[in-house]
Structure formats: C-alpha cells, structure tokens
Length: 116
Ligand SMILES: [Zn+2]
Image 1 (cartoon, protein in one colour):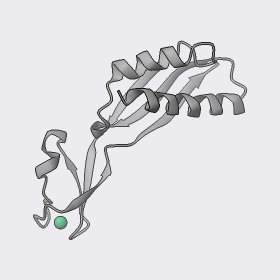
Image 2 (cartoon, rainbow, N blue to C red; image 1 turned 120 degrees about the horizontal axis):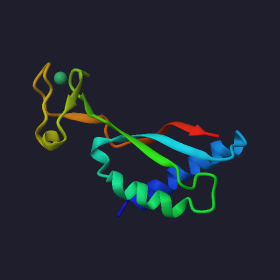
Image 3 (cartoon, protein in one colour; image 1 turned 45 degrees about the vertical axis):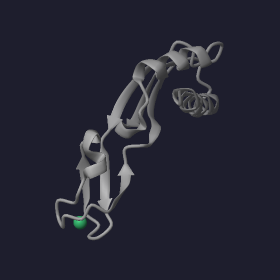
Image 4 (cartoon, protein in one colour; image 1 turned 180 degrees about the horizontal axis):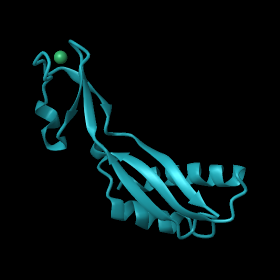
C-alpha cells in the first residue's frame, strides 16, 4: 500500500501550487508516473479523493500518464527503453552489457493541473 504516501505527496504539491496561485478549485491534475512504480491508478484516485476532502483539490480528476522504464548502460552509456516484465534480464542493445542503472520508470510528478 505505497499509494497512500505517494498520493499524499502529490496532494501536498498540488495544494502548495493552488495556494500560491490563489486557486478556488482544482478540476483535474495530470500526473506522470513511472511504469515501475507499481502504483495502481484506481487506488491513487481513491486515496486522493479521501485525502483531498475539504481542500481546494476535492473532487479533482487525476489523469495518469505512464512513463516508460529506461536504463543507462554502465559500460557505454547508451540509454535504452525496457519492457517492465523484462527489466531483470535487460541488456544493452549497443554493447550487450547487462550492467546498467534505471534512469526513469520509478518517478512520479505533477505535470499539469487545471484550476478555476
Ligand atoms: Zn552498452
């Protein structure tokens, strides 16, 4: 159940922006969430509805966009996309090394929000 702290983090960012911009109501929020982050859209929305009660973000609709997983090769620095089901045996298309570090796929951030 790591959707709860993540959703709380997202809500805090949204409320901070809303306060700075003197927003009356947040209508929708566009989020980018890494494919590897293992968060379920339905739960994020559910926690969001629960946590945003009595705030300007109450009732906001979340639009979730998935960010694909990419890996940077430790040997030749090539950055390549990986199928999330094959992350553990991914290898570099340029040099064939299986040593690499994930550069995207676990992050989450607020991309945009629609407000009144
Ligand atoms: Zn390589």
